Figure (cartoon, rainbow, N blue to C red):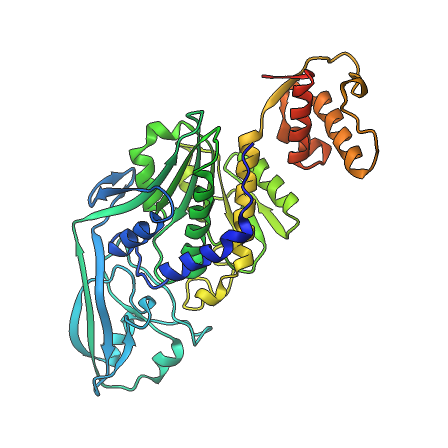
Length: 430
């Protein structure tokens, strides 16, 4: 049996990982991503792959690599009124190099702010169209006096590569469980780093475990990363039996699961059962072709059984894609709870099997096999009900998870019942 129980012990180390990664300026390519993967590799075995600029990924093309050293807007007095060194959200990601002096009216079209959140810095990108810009609070933007400003973006946009990391944990079976999280956001704690932390520590707990499935954790940029991975691994994709995109897992919101494209895949039932048994608030929503990388894995050409687990959904919390998505937004309890549900879903997948009742004509006598407890009680009654349900539905067509859902019982109780019935010779595996 796969046992993953160190959720509370992992919450501080997960937060420490988030805090360490937070200052790095990530984008869909570049040294910030490589440094992020290097730090993740301190915790789990990780292979970093480089996909050259210009590589086709179906209808997309891997862009040129972007790196940035510094950026600022200086006023006439020489003060940095906008400073990349203070917050890397101040620069539109993928901004081309700029070094010029201009008046405020000329600069304004390149400034981005949030009138409805005047104290926050927005997060903006320009991945696939050459442009440049700065992000700043609306309050600061309104306070800028007319005059000349020195504008500098010390960046490079040149042929390089896209980096993604893979942690491959072989199991007894070549069938795979795919876990994907994105690595392309700069200093945003929940949208990016919480998912990286949870996936890192899920993989870390799986490393020493005896595994039925092969587990493939992929840490890559959103959209172009999953497309690049799929384009390079189309043959391996046929081995994916279950998959999960794990993102936005550190805020105080309740957990939210988005079903796979099929809507009734085993991963859908496993995660929903784990959520139900978690005792926490959760929601389940149907698949839609909008969101994160689940829409690439669930595109019609692949139609892989990949769902998505978040807390507050993308665009679903006021701090989303702003400077307020900082370390203060991360709750240690949320990180631990997210890890617990992911680990519980994995445990269900690992142990979900089909059996056949070897004594199907009538109810077998459990007492003479020592399967009834001598002293009754609620726990023994639940155990006996689990045995009866498992015997009744073990016809080769129902999995243990299906039995647990039909019976309204915890999967673990059904699994233990199946083990006892196997030991007593009343079940055989399909």
